Length: 85
Image (tube, rainbow, N blue to C red; front, side, top):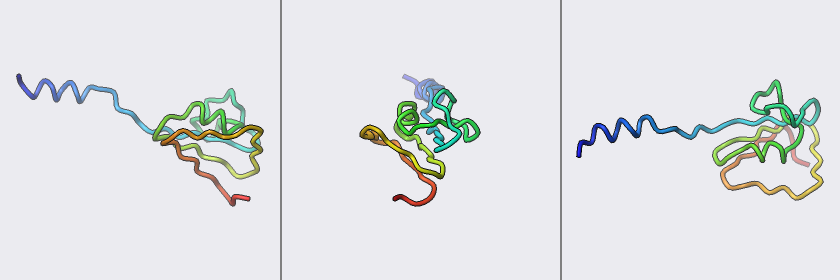
Protein backbone atom coordinates (compact mmCIF):
# COMPACT_ATOMS: atom_id res chain seq x y z
CA UNK A 1 0.00 0.00 0.00
CA UNK A 2 1.36 3.40 -0.93
CA UNK A 3 1.14 6.12 1.68
CA UNK A 4 1.17 9.05 -0.79
CA UNK A 5 -2.27 8.34 -2.34
CA UNK A 6 -3.76 8.01 1.16
CA UNK A 7 -2.31 11.36 2.20
CA UNK A 8 -3.68 12.94 -0.98
CA UNK A 9 -7.17 11.74 -0.12
CA UNK A 10 -6.90 13.14 3.40
CA UNK A 11 -5.89 16.51 2.00
CA UNK A 12 -9.08 16.59 -0.06
CA UNK A 13 -11.34 15.74 2.89
CA UNK A 14 -13.60 18.60 4.03
CA UNK A 15 -12.21 20.57 6.95
CA UNK A 16 -14.42 21.82 9.76
CA UNK A 17 -14.07 25.58 9.99
CA UNK A 18 -15.30 27.51 13.00
CA UNK A 19 -18.02 30.02 12.19
CA UNK A 20 -19.01 33.32 13.77
CA UNK A 21 -22.66 34.18 14.44
CA UNK A 22 -23.91 37.64 15.37
CA UNK A 23 -26.89 38.67 17.48
CA UNK A 24 -28.10 42.27 17.93
CA UNK A 25 -30.34 43.43 20.76
CA UNK A 26 -31.94 45.85 18.30
CA UNK A 27 -31.99 45.73 14.52
CA UNK A 28 -31.49 41.98 14.27
CA UNK A 29 -33.84 39.60 12.50
CA UNK A 30 -33.97 35.82 12.87
CA UNK A 31 -34.55 35.51 9.12
CA UNK A 32 -31.12 37.10 8.50
CA UNK A 33 -28.21 34.77 7.78
CA UNK A 34 -26.58 35.79 11.07
CA UNK A 35 -23.04 35.02 9.93
CA UNK A 36 -22.34 38.64 9.04
CA UNK A 37 -22.33 41.49 11.60
CA UNK A 38 -24.23 43.64 9.08
CA UNK A 39 -27.10 41.11 9.08
CA UNK A 40 -27.34 39.87 12.67
CA UNK A 41 -29.91 37.60 14.21
CA UNK A 42 -32.38 38.95 16.78
CA UNK A 43 -32.29 36.16 19.37
CA UNK A 44 -29.64 34.09 21.10
CA UNK A 45 -31.58 30.81 20.62
CA UNK A 46 -31.66 31.40 16.83
CA UNK A 47 -27.88 31.79 16.79
CA UNK A 48 -27.33 28.70 18.94
CA UNK A 49 -29.59 26.69 16.63
CA UNK A 50 -27.29 27.57 13.70
CA UNK A 51 -24.01 27.15 15.59
CA UNK A 52 -21.92 24.00 15.83
CA UNK A 53 -19.09 23.01 18.15
CA UNK A 54 -16.15 25.36 17.64
CA UNK A 55 -18.37 28.30 16.61
CA UNK A 56 -18.66 31.63 18.44
CA UNK A 57 -21.91 33.52 18.98
CA UNK A 58 -21.16 37.25 19.31
CA UNK A 59 -23.69 39.23 21.32
CA UNK A 60 -23.95 42.91 20.51
CA UNK A 61 -24.38 45.58 23.15
CA UNK A 62 -27.79 45.89 24.71
CA UNK A 63 -30.19 43.83 26.79
CA UNK A 64 -31.30 40.37 25.75
CA UNK A 65 -34.42 38.98 27.42
CA UNK A 66 -34.66 35.20 27.52
CA UNK A 67 -38.15 33.71 27.87
CA UNK A 68 -36.91 30.11 28.13
CA UNK A 69 -33.93 28.31 29.59
CA UNK A 70 -30.87 28.64 27.39
CA UNK A 71 -29.24 25.31 26.51
CA UNK A 72 -25.72 25.93 25.25
CA UNK A 73 -24.26 22.84 23.56
CA UNK A 74 -20.68 21.87 24.33
CA UNK A 75 -18.10 23.66 22.19
CA UNK A 76 -20.13 26.78 21.36
CA UNK A 77 -18.74 30.03 22.77
CA UNK A 78 -20.89 33.03 23.73
CA UNK A 79 -18.88 36.26 23.44
CA UNK A 80 -20.63 39.30 24.83
CA UNK A 81 -20.02 42.98 24.51
CA UNK A 82 -20.41 45.08 27.62
CA UNK A 83 -21.25 44.13 31.18
CA UNK A 84 -23.31 41.24 32.51
CA UNK A 85 -26.06 42.34 34.89
